[in-house]
Image (cartoon, rainbow, N blue to C red; front, side, top):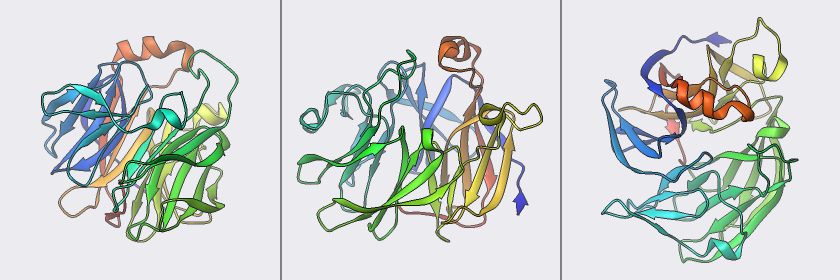
Length: 293
């Protein structure tokens, strides 16, 4: 097992989520500032557009370059900077949407849940929805224990999702129509959020061996781990704050981008946002990124 030391690329941010390598830069959702930001490898950042208010929204692109944004509704970021509703996802569920991934065929997968996490409501299982490239929306999976980050393999055959409250990555087969089947545990004993896959079939996710999960004062505040199917941890990256998401990118796909911030619990989100502890960190990865996002 290898321990890797990251470096800070950008800091002074609120909450940072949904990292995506796109068009030569890392793009991410800047929660608490209602911004979509892109940053290059030298740390030069630019606000690329407006995001919805609040937390719990993500970004991805259709094959034609259209930027999609989740939140209370699935929206498209128009050329003039405005946000307009996209797709008939309300027929699937009347709650908002959390994470998103668009596969190589133009199918959009969304996930969400119907309880107030920040308000302290009791958790309820969430769902995965599919918006096909032809515009049809339907539910394709249920009973997801706090659905979070998703990846799709390069051949469009497998979707892996973070079930954050269950501490596991769960895989599904994808058929020719985009429907999901053959649900199975890909790896467990983790603390997964947004995830990314590499060319060796491993996933960069988050460890459960952190202070947030264990209350162990000697544990790191956050830790990114590279795991293979079955749960073997191959690499670790300890951090001094909680990890929110990972993405592989850079010119050759081997730059690992990590977004992190202090997590003080759902009752202290406003305090944490105001303190601007959010960061983008980078490290060199052993294998390039593949698949979607």
